[in-house]
Amino acid sequence: MTDITTGAPAGRARGGSASLKGAGLLALGIAAALAAGFGLGGDPFLLNLAGYTCGFAIFALSVNVMLGGLGEVPLGHCMFYGIGAYAPAMAMNHAGLPYEAGVAIGMVVAALIAAPIGWLTLHLTGAYFSIVSWGLSGVAMVTALNLDVTGGPLGLFGFSRLAVGPFDLSRPQTYFFVAAAILLAVLVVLYHVRGSRFGRAMEAIRQGPHLARSLGIDVFRERLKALVLSAPIAALAGALSLPYTQIVTPEVMSVLRTVDALLAALIGGVGLIFGPAVGAVIFTILPQFLDLDPNVKVLVFSLLIILVMVAAPGGLHQLWKAAAARLSHARKGDAP
Amino acid sequence: MTGWAVEAAGVEKRYGGVTALKGVDLRIPEGAIHGLIGPNGAGKSTLFDILCGITKPSGGRVSVLGMDVAALPAHHVARRGVGRTFQRTATFRDSTVRENLLFASYGRMRHSVLQRMARAPAWREDMAAFETRADAVLETCGLAHLSDQPAAALAYGTQRRLAVAVMLMNDPKILFLDEPVAGMNDAETAEFIALVRDIARGRTIVIVEHDMAAIGALCSEVLVMVDGAQVVSDTPERALAHPDVVAAYLGTDADD
Image (cartoon, rainbow over all chains, first blue to last red; front, side):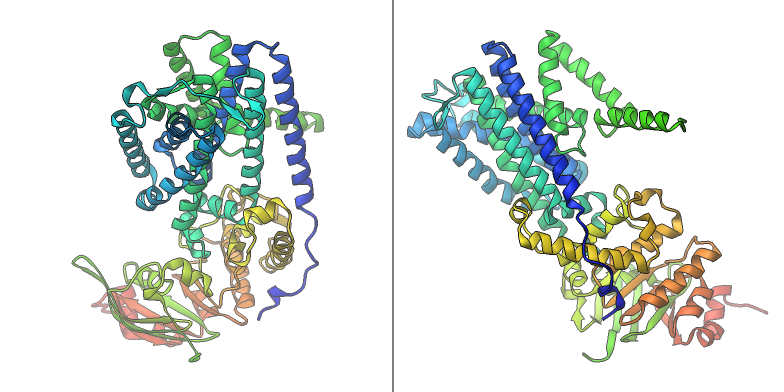
């Protein structure tokens, strides 16, 4: 039709260096996990905490599909985390099913529930979406509080065997390695999601929903897909908390859990694939080493968030980037 | 097809008690560059949004490329060959020029997340087709050397060309430009006029614009709207000389 469709040489190998970088980061992640797993000196408490942190990192990644991906604040995301924690607990305690089956059920249920919830709420944006999603998670929490199958206010505990195949999650080191492996797998999946047609549609919608629509992107449908993708990831995270907590109570669906994940994502950087995971590590490990009281922790992290938002609104990695840029400028001799 | 890219008859739009469009008729032949002018508040933007399927009319018939755009969601209208730029320049500001074009290629790509993970042929074909097309579009719009620049860092006139490039990725059969040269300096305007002429081959272009020099240089015909109704539809010279148009722009009771 026009001369635009013809001419120009065939595509050059652009994806190459990006995938190499991705593979490098993955190798770094594996190395870090191995170092942590063997380096924590076999301290069972720290290893358990590290395993739990991997689960929390997965939740932060799930939350960030909505936050960094769509620009929405999914306050009610704790509901999917809760579903993921309750499902294996109920499957083991009531149906005698193995842990893995419960995890799978939780992920499927989370996705199935996310679809109608998204259909109802994703026509809303901004604060409206956040508040309605928060309200729905409150409904879920009250439901868990009042049902017998969820154990009411006492919750569910006394699980039979927490294991993934041959890997016994009651062994702290195994728990950590399994959780770390799953975390890395989630990172790989999300990395490819971002580079796919769907991931680009999400980014286009985040930056300009009207322009995205004018390019033929079904804004509502892509937003719905994002929620349905992130819900089972949150459920997976919830399930991975069981070996650490050994109990599920309605508290698991507290909005504070979402807020923690949002803070982790903001600290680590919402624009980076692994940002929320790094943030989650900082968010969990730092107070542990500094031996912070939970109340003081809230204060410290509130201050940290304010500092991050002022100095590096894209997350802590911005500081690193800025420092690197300044260094390379200095080397070229044209420092500002 | 009928030979008409746009056929609209008796288009009305009411917002509560306010009537923004009072029965507008408009026919644009395929391949034409058509202007849409009138003072602020004349209903140009409302008509524009109706033609792109973003706003639904309260009455009348609207057919664009043979589609009943009033009955289709906006993204369907876009997928079937209707492109538009926005009055407030809309690009993906956090991304580079090339990434902007990548987002715009959504409709031309087919690969799934799994195919991307496996680097399957579907993904490779999508990306190769994208590179070819992006290179050609960047060349046409004079953006080739800016490919890796962040969109937000571009000069104003360049951002407007990027907005056009983004739309060209979908090779629209009809392209609506909402005040494309507003705020441009003379050199940028001249450059933009040349670009529009270049991309007009093989497609229909509709321009809302206040810059009459640009309208005169580009359009074969203009529709003049005042207060939600059409006043005249003619060549730019004759339309602008029409007494009702003069009155609308300079005020009624002009005692010369």
